[in-house]
Image (cartoon, rainbow, N blue to C red):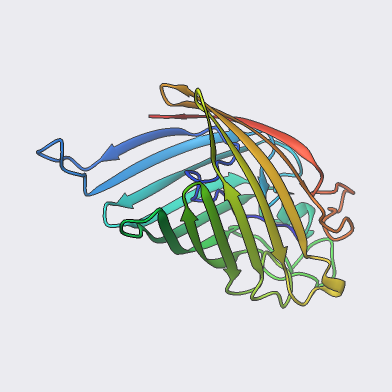
Length: 268
């Protein structure tokens, strides 16, 4: 089954290959040394091939994406993001479900006097009006509704981040898949001159699927370049060992193939 989530709110840790045009507004402070009580940022972007956990969300085609993020100086954050998708139709055989709309919120903080920080929260991936499991290419009961809710927690030490996601209901339309898990280990290597290299390895587990066909591992390496003035370029090489029959859509396209994705991001 397709792994989707729109845009992970952790872009500051593991940058997805997107072009984001951001407009940031912060609360005014009388003293420039006073930390603003909150920040509000808007973004819109494009990516050559929208991938989440190594699996194609747009059948290997480009995607337009965007979102809004609210961050409090007290560590509380809320956000929403959107993207066009095609996997709900192409993999689940639905006749509706072209848009992914994510809502997330949580709390992040630094552990006092250490290099540790943590982040806990909940994210929901919504596919408005999708009829996965109701009508479509497959018999009734093959899939359930594609919309998904996950709880997550991550721990960062220096350049290393370990993250854990767990679904609170059926995962992306897989029947009886509540409790699906994703383990994510990554690091951010500063190469100087505006370059950062982000290697990543992940493991997806989807219970109650025949012969564990939904389980797989994914790896990637993302190179980012900060060009200054808010412009950042990304290139990601990624691959998976996802089961081909399970992750091949109704048109015969394998969605876990090894590929290179590129993008740009502009923020201000």
